[in-house]
Image (cartoon, rainbow, N blue to C red; front, top):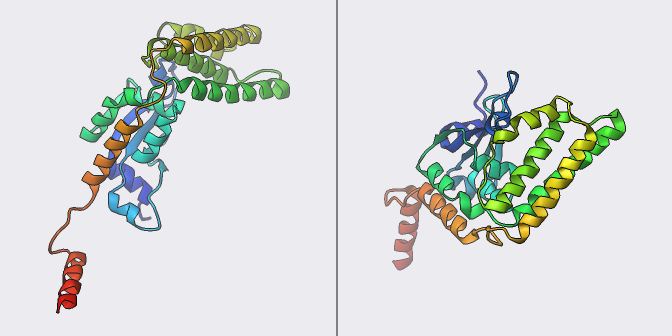
Length: 251
């Protein structure tokens, strides 16, 4: 029997939040859809006291499962990373302990007008891939085109309202029609252009703050690390060694 992967053990023993992502969370699942799981774990504080640090993310141990260490997760969320923010707003939460619920309560602290740059930047990268598919294969990957439209829609609505909803709601059938290749590329391009222009317009009057609340998130992370740190024990050998050294020095 092979020893358990240390990263998998961190996910198993120290997860604070877990959710389902992908098409199931977006309201776009069909019969063949996978169940993509995402989560956040807190590596014990003492693991950071050595040169070898704990992993910032872990793939597994379940199929289609991916988890981030809390600090990395917060760092990416403060940057407005679309995948991370979507994870925080998944309607399909499978697990959250007290720390996980506090993280969820911080969701608004991560939101700011910076999402315009991060979401549209990510969308531009995906659009380049679609254009490359067109040049190489004569057609885009329609599933990727669907998700790009979904992303642009959620960005526009977030900038307009200040609220982040990832379930596509009434857009389910139009988006699935794109996935099935039932919408022409010209129509998809026009749809993308319209969403991009609407997001630009929404940015000017967005109720979102200019920047995320770094101080609030930093305070949360500090408290979690402090709680996870081993408490000083007068019988601990390190403490005893320090006390003994002081006595020798005083003698």
